Image 1 (spheres, rainbow, N blue to C red):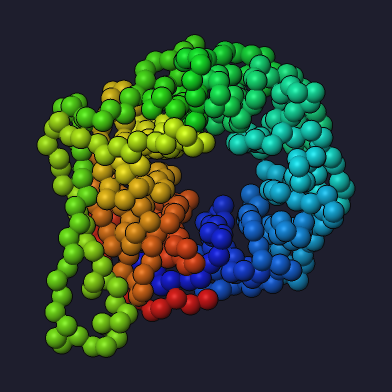
Image 2: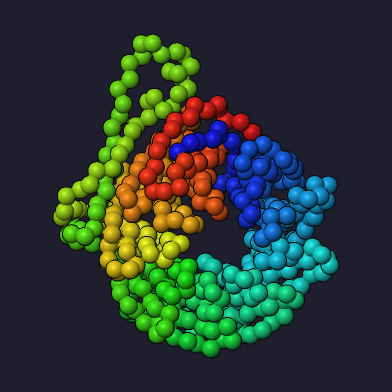
Length: 461
């Protein structure tokens, strides 16, 4: 692995363009666009206020910057740097902004979710959609960009509207059989819409494109229900994580449960491998070291770590949630399925230091990664069965079927990795700390990972 130098960012606003050619970051009110291969600045834009949200258009030609405090959205063009667009929602306010799939319409949600405003960059026309519901995930587009599903709340009932994105006409409008709709998501093939209820009731509904209810699934009653949902890339499986610390897998033919994955406190499965992170602080003598090395070289004094295989049975660290506090730290809060549909990664909130990897072919536990700190973020390589994760320290961790590796980020100063994501090619990782970003380049296309420490310069803008 090789690492780039460090660049500034704010509010975790760092996005790679869909075509993979550019890297956009926001630093307060400035938008910086770099060539991804050389990291040279190609465009620099100045916004009217500190940017709260930033997003690329689907064709990588425009960038949207939202300033929620002022109710403003600015759109910048890469082909014509002198052209720009300003959208002002006025006194009605702004709480979210996003692109439509065609990259020529901007969807703004006003304060108190009074309406969704659709702004056209081509015709300058404006359309309004009333009654959007304020929920976890109330808007979703099909992968081909043809349809949009919108959750609505009217007369104390949940409804779903399906719009055609070409001209924004209403295709279907139907009532949802939910008490308090919490989210909706299209399957990757765009044929099925999954809709789930709030955590107070375990219910997930599957609708067709024309609004027909295909199936309804409820695992239990009178207890906290669904916490996370994830489709497999093939649309053949739907993984549902819940507060009872289990993941249930539904199949796409009958929409019935085919298996459920438990997260036990003691692992006794002989086919599972438990990788435990072990830290070791380096002992470095100060003789012969320059003042620059002593004050700036983080890699000399940072805590090193490696993975060791734990003998079974193995105990998993558990944190007991506080029953008197809202949103208890318990249950499956995050799910992710690999690009080849073979592996499922899960995180149980009352086992925050452990990441679980399941084999979807054998429907069994494959590996558990026990970290020294709570797992903050994990994401699959978009092309290979390779998982990257971070825990808020100076390291990045990788898992593949071949094993695990822990790599220290060798930059000057302290770079605490708060989140990360893959480049669309899978050839590199973008690492984000609180105020900086760093790129991690994969040297080997296979799963064996070699580490090459690159001495880098200090943070620059």
